[in-house]
Image (cartoon, rainbow, N blue to C red; front, side, top):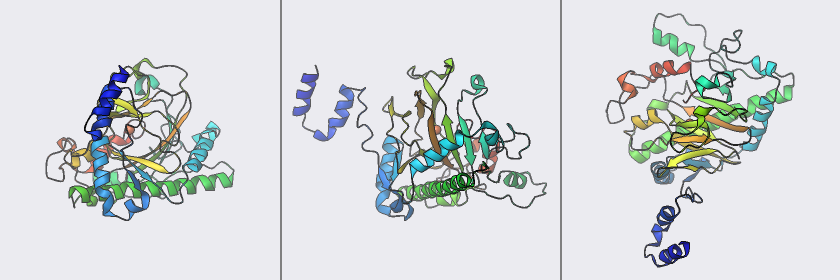
Length: 359
Ligand SMILES: [Fe+2]
């Protein structure tokens, strides 16, 4: 049968169609499926070199994601090592910077350490998280009867950093992830500028000029000791670590050399090549998808079960507090617009669950 197919391929006139034909003949064959995903150099993205725009847009439309590569002065393996060291710290050291749900002595509701291995049955989550935001200090205390102004203040939680007694570790940890946050924020914003140019949506970048809610999450998915029966995919029965979902805003992701991420492409979940030493994956979620009239897909994805402790870093860039998310760039009512006008209202409903669920 395969010999027949090979002969068929050799005589097929349109060689450009070979990849599609191969997929039809051997649908399980994922090798090379994502070879066409764009790999955009970091500096070209940041410097608004418009030659990248059609490649980026085409990749987003076809695959739902692209890679940012060649990031200067960035080491994924350094981040990965330090993150592992953080998770190897004694629990009481990490508890010192835990969010208040886990350590009532702390004020922060979402910036800090969020252990997430309890209540697995109800949340379906099995991951620990350390959440970093854009603020190092909180503004002077604020008294106002205006609910939204109070919310704006409440949301600006200052970061908390580990204090281990090892000054060198503490310094390297803080500096590395402050720098890592900046790089990802740059990527997220430059992506918005590129897509705005490519799709001729000049008003889009203005919705992202502040990033009060951007969030970087250092995630550890430990090996599961017990299989939760709810973690089998409804789609194809695969055992999962993270159920199928779409994101909400703009996602900049590091998978390092840790396999497991799969995206839905041509009605099949397929393994996404890892980001490795020097790249990021960028995709969008539903909120942003709706803002741009659903012209670019918010790709469905999941994490398959793997037999090792899996580390990843997510970064989410949302619109600014005052951004009107009720209408798309062409004025259509968005799904979020049924209930909310500005992003600040939307995020309020999300804060309690931020990161422990899907953001
Ligand atoms: Fe996701």
